[in-house]
Length: 356
Image 1 (cartoon, rainbow, N blue to C red):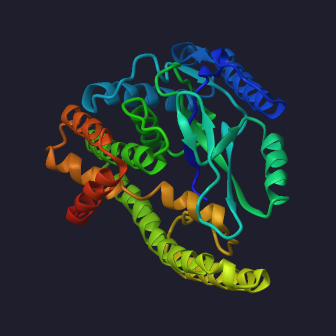
Image 2 (spheres, one colour; image 1 turned 180 degrees about the horizontal axis):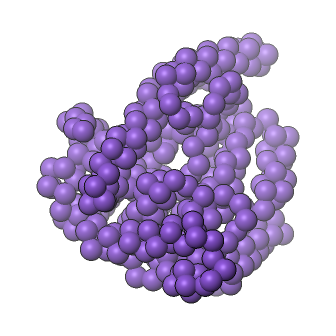
Image 3 (cartoon, rainbow, N blue to C red; image 1 turned 90 degrees about the horizontal axis):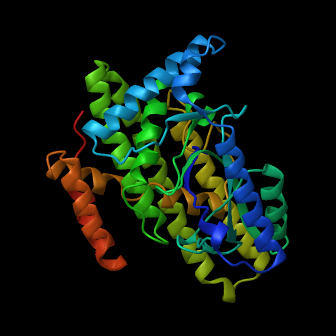
C-alpha cells in the first residue's frame, strides 16, 4: 500500500501513565523519537562534509530550496523544521498498525492525551507492531501493518529530514515535505480524513507551484496521475465497502462461516478489479503490484486518507491560491460540527474540476 504519513506527539513525557502495556508502548515511542533526534546533524554540515555522497548532497540542497519555498510561497510554518538530517539506513521511519473487527469497517481507536483518538498506532520497531498485531488476531480482527515514510509532531518539535525523504524521487520528496509542514498548520482530534486530505491538498498545489518555478511542469502531471490512480481505486473500495457494510449489518441473522465466505468473495472480487485497473498504470497502484490480498483494515485505512482532497483543492482554487486566506478558511471550517464540515466538503468536492 502507498506509504503513509503519521501524526505523532511525544507530550507523553509529562503525562501520568498506568498499565504495563501503556508504559511499554509510550516507552518505545519516546525512546524511538529521542534516538532519532540525537542522531540528527545540521544539514549544512552534512552538505559541506567531504565524505557526503554527492547524490545525497544534491538532494539536501534541493530540500533546502524546497524548505525556503514552503515558507515564502506556501505560507507554511517552517521554523527550524527540516534543518537537520538523520541517516536511518532504511526508507521508513516507523510502521503503523491498523486493526478492524472481522465483520466491521470501523477501525479500532487508540486514544492519547492531547491528540485525541486515532485509528492507527505507530511503532519504531517492527517486532513491537507484530506483537500487538498477534493480540488482535487472537480476537479475530483484520489487521494491516504499513511502512510510514515520515511523521509530524505538529510543531512541538523541529522534525528532521531523514532517509525516508531522500529515498524518494525529487518531486515526491518535495511533496512529502510540503505535506508534513501542512500538518503544523491545523490538526483536528479524531478526524484523520480531514487532517490528511487537507495536508494532501497543500502537498499537491504546493508541488504544482514548485514545479512551475523549477521549469518542470510535467512532473505535476505524474503527481496527478498518481492521484487519479488513488481516486479510481477509492471508487472501487467505496463500492465494495458499501456491499460489506450491508453484509456485516446482517451478521446476527447469518452463520459466521457463511459471513466469512461472502466477505472473502467480495474482497477477492475487489482484488481482481484492482488488478485490472492497476494494469493500466505506469507506476505501482495504491495497494502495490497485483496480486494483492485485501482485508477490512486496508479498506478502512485507505478510505480515511483519500476522502476530501478535491474539496480542499477547490477551496484553495476559489481563494485564488492565497494560502494565508486558505488556512484561515480551513481553520474556520474545522470549528464546525463534524456533520456540517462533511456537508460543506461534499459540496466543494462536487464543484471541483481538474485543470492540467
